[in-house]
Image (cartoon, rainbow, N blue to C red; front, side, top):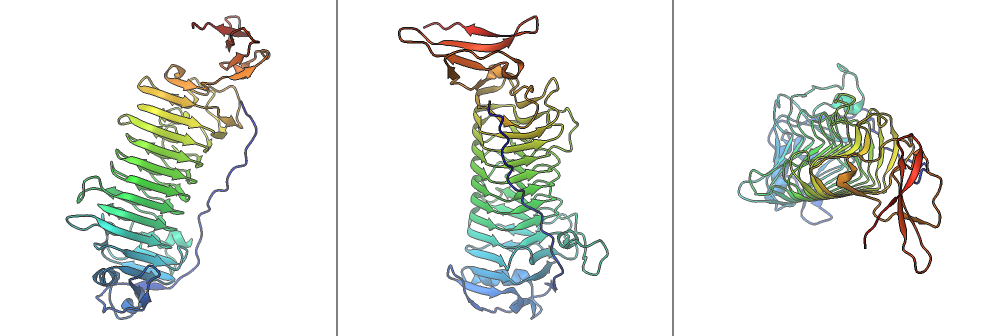
Length: 435
């Protein structure tokens, strides 16, 4: 086993923001077209509408009525007292950058969503959200204290920040979604069977929501690249019963329940992600104390967890696999996990309902006498044992390892496992093979 300490990827930092001007959207507005977008279509500056006493929704409607285009939000805080709705194709909402272009609630939006992407009777094509912050409380975004001159109301009873319903080809790029009672991004399928498909999240921050992203049994062909999914009150990323989800280079940390939940889905790849201190809401030795939970509802198939970094206190396991067929867990690194020495602690916790689980060696920076996988009878681990010309001295650190002693010409190889004998000593036991 490779015990070399790896360098930890830097976590994305939560960015504090200074003061910004407040722009209040409340009334109706006339159309004002300022330029053409890089992708073609209408380009509108939101201030051309707001300065005439009109609303964000009417600016969105103007873009839609023009057949698509871009609505640009210069630096500022833009308030809406109603749910914003995108009902047409090819609509882009773009800010100057997510540190300074902020859309937030004003007035009473109790149990309502901030942005709804939905139209009756079919899919919405080609929606983009770029370089924005969506929040229900600007106090925490700006680092202000409650009651300061720039605080604004805390609409903590709001529901989801963004609802994608029947959408196709949605790109959400460099967007912060912060402080919602519901989910940061909620996938739904009330208007189109299967719900959203081909959704891409790039370098987004989803924090202090219920789930950062909740796919709700939808979300075919979802790609998540980079960004942070942190401090959510349930799951960082919650996948459901649809296929093909790819998650790469994301930081998933400090979520109250599990970092990533795969309830019953197929073809999921989690690669090069960082997991730290998830499952804070569970008791120390509960089985849910895990970073990734696979198949808690029904069988999950074709799951790959590759090249991830794990750090967690009082974890029951790094990865819990309840119901699954075809899981590959390889090339991962454990920086810290201080409860793996308990009777039930393991890097990977499996159950009798699992089939075809392959666990390659973990590298680690923790005490090496932890159990690497629980219930190993349900998993294949290191299916190609290392070859040696002579057996090394047996000891506790390599207990359970298998090696293949290569034979000379005309003789068969021999397979051995390092085991603890009844007297407490460690020995190599030869495994009999029938040909």
